Image (cartoon, rainbow, N blue to C red; front, side, top):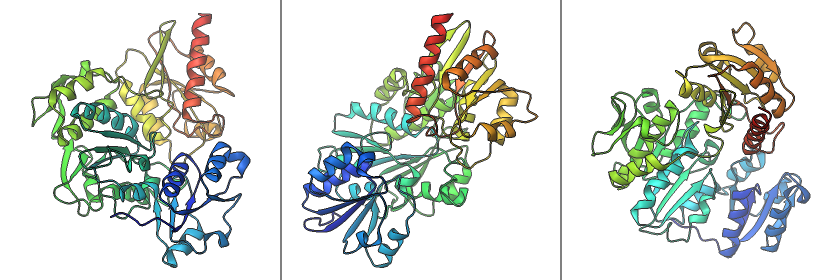
Length: 452
């Protein structure tokens, strides 16, 4: 159901990448647009200049209550925290929606939505690679890149197209009518507890991806997490992946679709780590549900090498392997990284730390006790990690920069070991982004190799 936007008084709260895309969309359809952001024009830079050039009125540097008056629609960007002004607007009857909800009102193509705590970007991209063989216009984006609103009004967003999106819990908070033909929940582990009141509240936000599904749609879940079934009150036909009884699972070392001829030996997969085997199973199942031929799925599984800063092999120096998983921004992701490397001939030297996200480090301590040799900590969470690992058998070091962390890890590692950057924290204390953090790790490893 589309919205009438012409001459409507609209507000976009948060002028990040998706917020600016919404401004473009609204102004192109004749809406009167206000932009509100706690940052000022100098901090917003080119985004503020473009929004103003498009005709939007800028209200920056805070959230004054009078800016929220006389509005017909408010679109909230995913990074915006809860605001009293938004609650007050809703009580006045003003629709307050997310960018993906707005996009869904103008998209007629089937939507494939991928969410979960870890692995979303890898799986979304892999599904996109598989669906690229369908011969139909396809959009791949959402939280991993292009805002979903950019699919609206395109061939990919029209009937006959296909829209594949990664969705975060933040994006799913304000959906009401969006319906995914295939909704995939990869996993749920503790994350963003600095924003959500409880793990249950965080999980409930993820589960909104299944809302409004009917029996003709598919709700895809991991077979080895039966508790996640409880998150779906109604919704689509449940289909499982992985584990012992998933429709697509590993059988005797071969990724197998029990309902198609798809058979790919795990050793032939282009992505590394046991958690990525589960990701591959999930992607293959979703691709089959939207009509991709098994031979095209198999080709993509063999060809796809993963994304930057996600279990990315960097180099081997003096018999030690270096792996960049800077995207492991929570404890569950860091544990999955370690699990994916379990069974290697050597031990793991882990580099971790950054901005703490409010969870427990207990599971990380347990896995490092089994698989680790040493831990190098840095950033704001360094002291928290040191306290969590007090009494652990792994050796602890603290570093003040990524270059120092890599140097310390190299000194602690032995031939056959793996130095793993899996920070278990967000990056914004010392780095511009997880990508900047990963780039600095890779540069330090290359410098190390040059000295070897």
